[in-house]
Length: 158
Image (cartoon, rainbow, N blue to C red; front, side, top):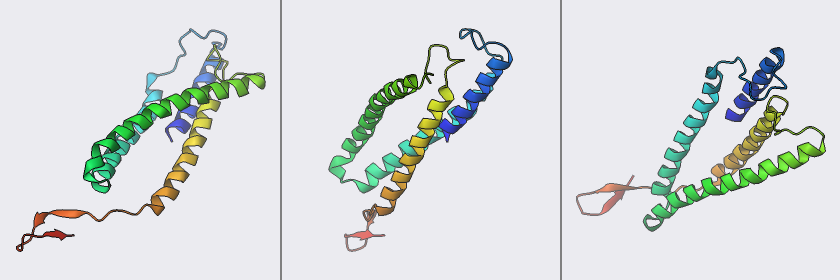
């Protein structure tokens, strides 16, 4: 959702640059309020919060005790791999779009089509979400043990 908002904001920014004759002046300031960036950053921030909290819960509730720290390390490693793959995606998009005659990620941001790249990211996020839903439906949760002891000294299950 954040990438769809970013694409819309970028399209608006380019239209404002075009209306003010700033298309060929990439270093000029486009008369647009900074507040247009708030929604996409809020969405990204909320997504990160829910992702980190959800993963911590998953690692501490569903993984064996011996592997809990490995789960947190795996999360951080996945972030690094994702950054590496995004660099490859930028190279692919730049190569494909330059063959079409008009680069999406050119030097002049007012003439480039950065909003198209954001739409590609939004589409990839939607595909990723569909894959997540398919996997989440098949996930079998481990039964949680309650940490208190009954009168007989045995652990009771919820």
